[in-house]
Length: 134
Image (cartoon, rainbow, N blue to C red; front, side):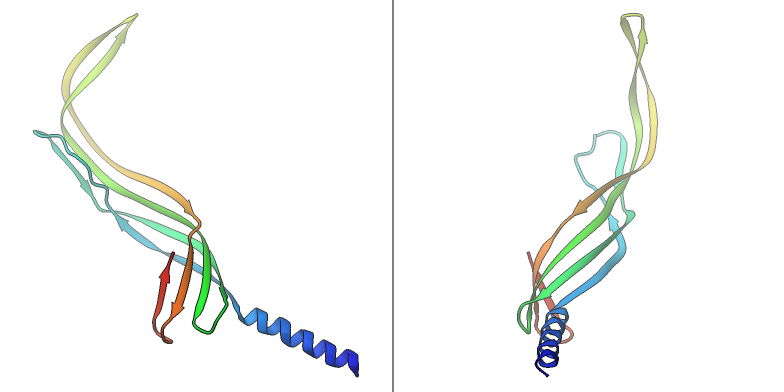
């Protein structure tokens, strides 16, 4: 009888700690653009590019409305870049160089990838609203 009471007590304790934890998956699309100083007198611009993010998260609820959440995220951000204008070419000949002037057209997609490990505190104001800070 004592064993059964101890087993039920331990089982209830473990169940209460499991419900205080949650795991999740985050995935979605990003639309980003870089900006910076552009050269004058040439056709140069940045545009919006698409990327994605994917990760897993873990939350531990230490009160009814408050939790601590940690995530491991892979995020891809970037920009489209176009350049049409004057360019210089450096041509090696032996130990010297010849410099030629011309025009260049560049159309490329710049992509950077990041792995981040954000830790946030979460307050659940109601069943529909959560606020995170961290």
